[in-house]
Amino acid sequence: MSEAFGPGQQRIGNQQREEAITALNDHFALARLDIGEYQERVNRASAAQSYAELAELFRDLPQPHPPFLAPPSVPFAAVPPPPPGFAPQPTQPYYPPPTGPQPQFAVPPPPGMGYPNPAAPYGVDPMTGLPLSDKSKIAAGVLQLFLGNLGIGRFYTGHVGIGVAQLLTCGGCGIWSLIDGIIILVNGGTDAQGRKLRD
Image (cartoon, rainbow, N blue to C red; front, side, top):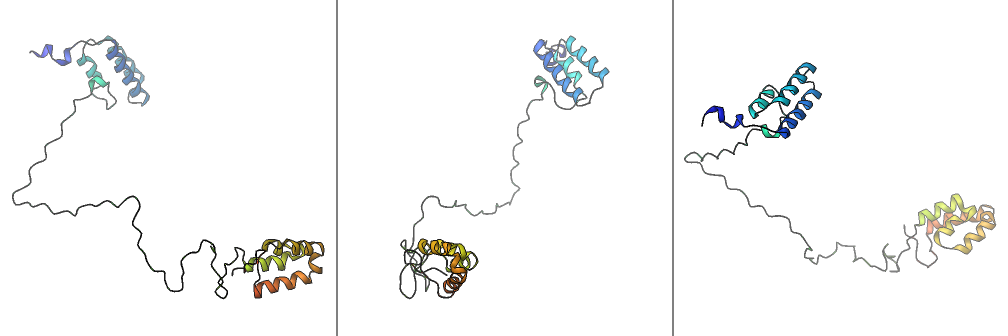
C-alpha cells in the first residue's frame, strides 16, 4: 500500500471538520492562538479533505485534540522476569476484621461495681439499697439558695406543694428558702417519689 493511500489520506466528512473547529475554539479560548492564527486554521479545517490535513492543524498544539486524532492506546509493557536468585519476601496474610455480632464473654465486674440495674439507672443508696433519684442534691440546693423565693428548688425535686407555698410567701421572707437550701446541700433529701437525691 503506498503512502498516498494511507490512513491519513482517508477522506473526512462534516462531523470531523466540526470536531476540529470545536477543538480550535478551545485553544483560542485558552489564548494558545491569536485571532489571525485562529481564523486561518478554522478556514483550513473547513476546507480540509483528509485526516492528514486536520492533523497538521494540531501538530504544535497540546490537548485537546479532536477525538478522531487521539493517539492509539499503548498496551501495558510486560513485567520483566525477576533476576536469577531473586526470592520474593513472604508477606503476612491479611485477615479482615470480623463483622456481625460478636460473642459475648462473661467477665466479672470490677470490685465495688455491681451489674447495672434497669430499675436504678443512677445507682442505689449504699446504706439502704434503694434506687437513687435522677435529681441532684447540689442542683436542688443551689436553686433553693438563689431562687428559693420562687420555690424553684422544690419544683425541681418535684415537691410542688412546698414550692407553691414558698412562692406565695416569698420563701418565708427568704429565711425558709435559705434554711431549706442549706439542709438540702448538707443532708441531701428526697424527691417527690421518696428517692434519695444523688450527689
